[in-house]
Length: 323
Image 1 (tube, rainbow, N blue to C red):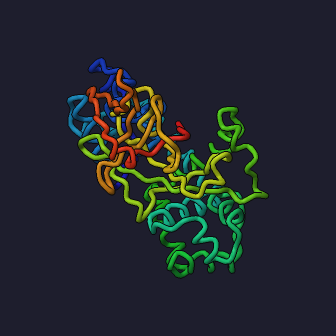
Image 2 (cartoon, rainbow, N blue to C red):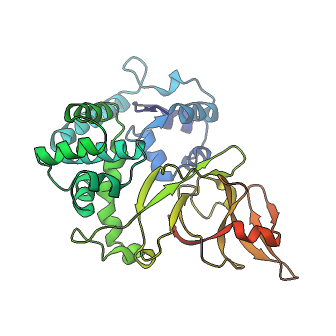
Image 3 (tube, one colour):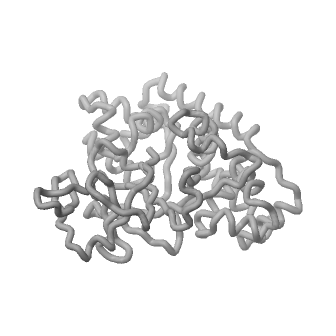
């Protein structure tokens, strides 16, 4: 879905109607910091989210846009400063833009890091650094990468330029910039040994939420890839799923990524992925009743899921949660 970047008056209308930032964040299913960035015009909204904001604030879409005729002067000036800031960043972030563009295109094509790096005749760690915007690319390497993505050099450059102009790369660049900070954080100490001298093990991430609060998992193509926690790297069947549902409860963000091990035994107290069909699943908190029978629990609204003995082969344990 197309994403929209615009100077906005969301904060003004939110305050006028007495809506708290947290209420808006919960309504959109995003974090509080994301709402702050949205209100400052630093983060994109898609059309569906824009309509949701207008509905919650009981105003028209046009009321949310800034224009010099009817918007507060400080809002207009803040937006102009942000555009100038972005222009300066673009002048010095060629490598970051290239890396973000490559990752965006590779993900859209459903290709893994390994597939592209092998086709481009380079190591996984080298190509990974290129996508992170941390390494320059020679003409020969650029040609090889373009070929690996099924394009000519000219087509690849034009595609990345188009994505950049549309504002589709900013979030990827921001995540790449923040990743070193995350790796240095004690919460992620198990990843600290991954460096530029070692190939980072990546695992695919699946999952799109549906109207029932369940998750559609299409393993024919991953949405993205994340670094595998070090203690799971010797397990070759690990994959990850976006939570993308509030049905597990509000303690875990709907943006969380759950690492699944299909061969771990599930027991009471675990969080697990329960497959309703081959491509539709739900996350459950596994509990045990007074007779020692396992059952699943979901919230929002509360729902108890009966698990028969045959269902246990459809339940896969969540072994790591990345918030």
